[in-house]
Image (cartoon, rainbow, N blue to C red; front, side, top):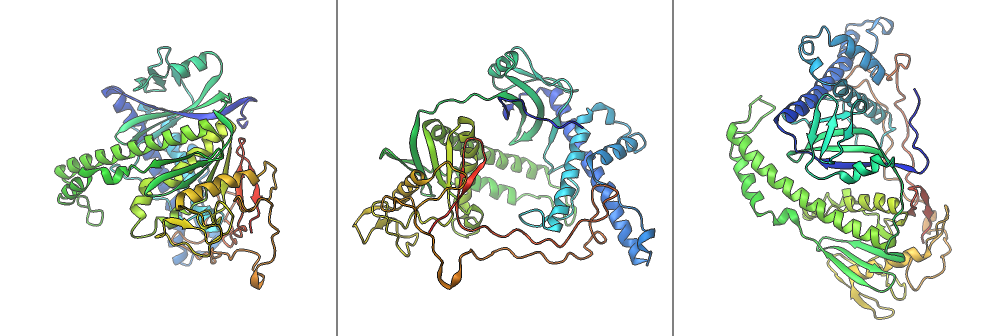
Amino acid sequence: MRKFTVRPGFTVLAHKLALDPNATATGRLQSHAGGARAAYNWAVAHVTSVWWQRKAEQSYGIGEDQLTPWRSWSLPELRKAFNAAIHTDPRFASWWQANSKEAYNTGLAHACAAFDNYAKSRSGQRKGPRMGIPRFKVMRTARLSCRFTTGAIRLEPDGRHLTLPRIGTVRLHEDASHLRALADAGRLRILSATVRRERGRWFAALQVEQRHELVKVARPDATVGIDLGITTLAVLADSDGNRGQVPNLRHLEEAQQLRRASRVVSRRQGPDPRTGQQPSKRWEKANRARNKIHHRVANLREDTLHKLTTRLAAEYGTIVVEDLNVAGMGQGRRLSRRIADAAFGEIRRQLTYKTRRRGTRLIVADRWFPSSKTCSRCGVARAKLPLSVRVFVCDACGLVLDRDDNAARNLAALAAHTTRSTRSRTGTGVAGDLDPPVVGSKPRGADRKTRITRPRLMAGTGRAGGTIPGPRPGQKRETVNRTPERTPCPGETVTDHSGRNAGIAETS
């Protein structure tokens, strides 16, 4: 099958639009999302049933050559098996024709990706926590979603309606005339549409191929350093000497009604999967009221972060941020709630793609870069600076400055010593260290960072009867004894407007 390639001068983007469906359209959207969930559950049962059968046969002493053959979980094989089963399976025979084929293809594609992630996690090819065997999706908790790649997917001429296959025309909550104008001019082409129920509303994400047009930023030669925090969300310091602060609104803590709503939910009879207890009507009503508050908090947080990152990406030509260990910071008992509410990782994610769109530079300082402990005037670094000390005092030059302001200055100065070359070298980024330092051997010969990940142990038989088969019938098993990649040395990651890695800068 021919692979999709983006046309020269175009880029693939996504536009998320809110929907206002009527009762008929809502029923069809829910039916398609339910069809995707049913196809996913069928695929999980289709593949894992053979796993349990082989395990049972092995317990009876049956030889390897006489065991039930593996079933492939590749998408073409799942499609072929599903198309043969829907005509005879009573679970699908009476209603499968009411939905588009894209609904069932969505569920099968998700099942294929789930099994691939499970196999890669078992073999050590996937980073992050180990994944278990794909499980069934429950109707009450499953996320309603469906993706359309073929058929009639278009924006109507009025810009207020979206047409989807088998669903029909759905009214948009917002005006999308600008997208329709781009499509009429030949600068935009819709590739796919994904509808999803999120935060109590239906949304449509249009994946489009759009002509890339760079918009000049207001200050292309200016650089800004961003120091993120909890008390103040962001402290800004640019290369022109300007300073600024973005307050942390703490949307989650300001939701005064959330605590009361949570107590009401806890006093109702909720679901219990261990005993099969079903939730009461009063619990569902109270849970909807609590979810409404959570949705409002999430919307307010998203609006604040988008306004902040859009303003920074539209004003500065170079933005410097820190590589924070957000997952590790969130494991603390006292500050985990506030760190999660601040959403440091979301700020960096938005800055990454917004700077790429505008052709500007995003510099990610190394995680071990001492931005707070280094004097922004003379460059002398302190040995220790506890978090309780909020004012930085330099013993060498006598500089007295707020801790976050000092860190933002150091981050802004770091960009001046970072070049666009693929293999750049940089100093500490402070005013007192203008030349790149010579990197020498560390004490005890520790020139490389100690590996913090443990190699995976040899995989055993597992719950599903031995080694994991491949997605193709000819591929019997996956390699299960792979050593994870070595943790790289500390360095600075630089991304340019094309999104490519501009190298790892050495630091002293």
